[in-house]
Length: 301
Image 1 (tube, rainbow, N blue to C red):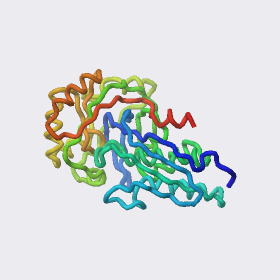
Image 2: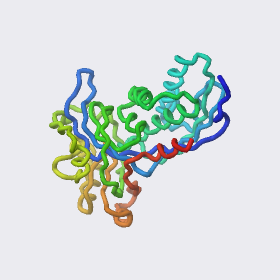
Image 3: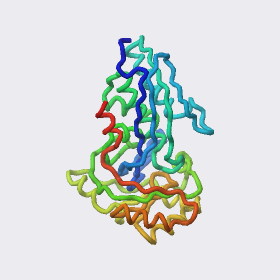
Image 4: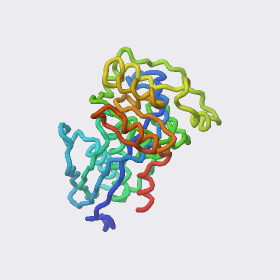
């Protein structure tokens, strides 16, 4: 391979959280995957990935996650998927990477931390390895790793359909959110394989007014999270915290849980409720973003 300007240098990349402002399950395909309609928005609250490019052909995750084998980590999987794709077009490709993860997003919370990590790796290494694959190509590779990966690849707030890969840009209000998590973690697989999960919500008509319509109050009766009732029936910790929060602010579970987001018009109001939370509740305050902070960093390289 020719000289690489990024070789042996270190770069920091944000790996942001997302919210599902609503999540409708509109069907199930023959292959078992669910057809979804959801509204994604990013948060200015991120894991951080520190990446150094090497010439040893090895993907080295220096900060393993307890209980997760490196080869099962989406960070390593994403890097290997990109490396294999690069090798198919450039058999002499000889670069690797040393990767460190500074993790602050909770696991099993529905904030998309693992998918975000994978997307950050795909975007970052595509640049640092000088692969020059298109966003569409990276999104296709990402979809093989997880349904939420494409939204993080493209980096704009979107109404998503299919299994999450059909994206229509939208501009929901960039509110402030208090994000909380009870003392439990929830398996996405268990939620989507549950017999009592609703799977027949009516589809939202797609038209020219879509962006404006979905920018209105997502807490109206038109929108909901189809996973929420199932989760609160099986996880009393989520039910108790959600019941407490809705007394103070519009609140809903994100994704398959267990995190709950409560919406506010100002950071001050979000922090005020944070101070009242039941003792020991995990929480953070963040602003909703319609553009991923990762895109801002990528544009500087």
